Length: 244
Ligand code: SAM
Ligand code: CA
Image (tube, rainbow, N blue to C red; front, side):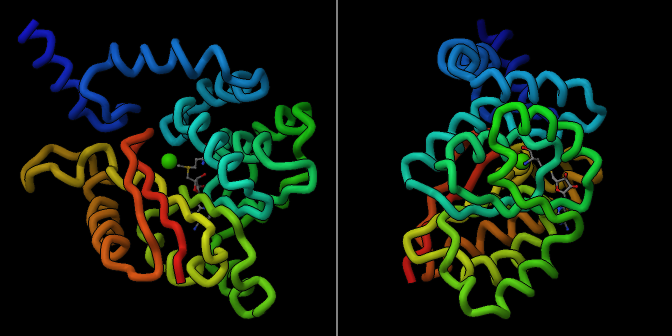
């Protein structure tokens, strides 16, 4: 038993692992008991398409997709934004949760991956809720911030893109989200590397972005304009509720 625990602990230090839980068996239990049996058919289809893509490590996990879908319904989100779409798993989780007249402004520098998942989103009957913008998100946010009528207009914003820009996004998003609305920053536990010792053998990209994630986490923790809650779902998601 001790050996088994040790080898599981070892595996969990590996970069790219999908869960921060202490055992793979426990994570499988969550997936098999409560996630997969309730996963909408289009999300399953998109997950299977994405699994064949070479960058599939980037996708939102099924349990996080279920969490986002539930959260959006709980807060009655209608006007939303997503930064970092990839093949659209979190986007579809969002689109399915919104009412018929709900909106998602979705941004990604890569249209090709979005288009891989788009037929599934169309078939699910929710593509009309999505406005996709190809290109870097920051200039789009700058444009939005210039127009006062966009201020306080978003119920929910999911940020899942270039971690070295999260603080730049936050500076703008805090004006765009409404008071009482939520910004979700994804991957804030960065594969557990936020607590890795300085000499830990981290992959290059993990090491590079880790400092940005650490800086973001510190900044969010002391930002008086928000209440925060860091959840060990997926790779860690920090929910920020704007309070002023
Ligand atoms: N939310 C997605 C899902 O559920 O599959 C995963 C997003 S993936 C982790 C990160 C995405 O951010 C990539 O598709 C990448 O092209 C995009 N990205 C990187 N830099 C960006 C930028 N400056 N602006 C917008 N998107 C960016
Ligand atoms: Ca993510």
